[in-house]
Image (cartoon, rainbow, N blue to C red):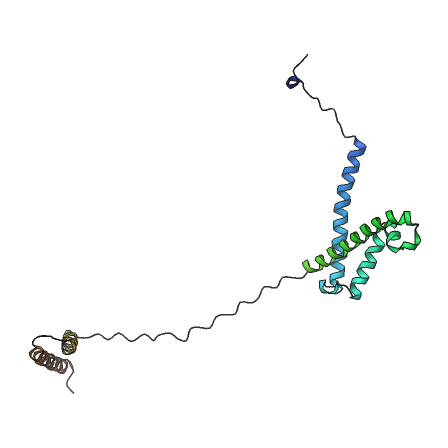
Length: 201
């Protein structure tokens, strides 16, 4: 007797051509159904149907539901149109379950229709408005070219101010006097240079 692990299982199952044609036909039907559904929904949207209309109490929803009911198989339509009184108690126990399922199927179709209307709303890209230029921009001060005399006079003047404001600085009086004299001398030299540079009238 062979070991079970050594037994080879040969698959002999073959799908017949007849069944294969049924599978092919079902796929074609799905594509055809999808195309016909899209055509119908596009037409409804083009006529002005919108998702917000497909709600309970709106006549548009009642119309959609009625049209969809007409497209359901006769057995489902008869169930949805029937009442408890139409059956014996024993029959109603079975029929009420089937009727509930048919009602859910119809409700699902209406819900899918509403979603289809939502998807058909074109997406509008908001226009980007140009931003206003900033008004709080610090104005750029013009660059002033200082002469060496002016640079030195400014530096000494600031040094003297710092000495006067500092506490316990030695020789404050002498340094301030010397600084003031130095600034005066630099200013006088600068004035003489400017006088020489200016053309005579």
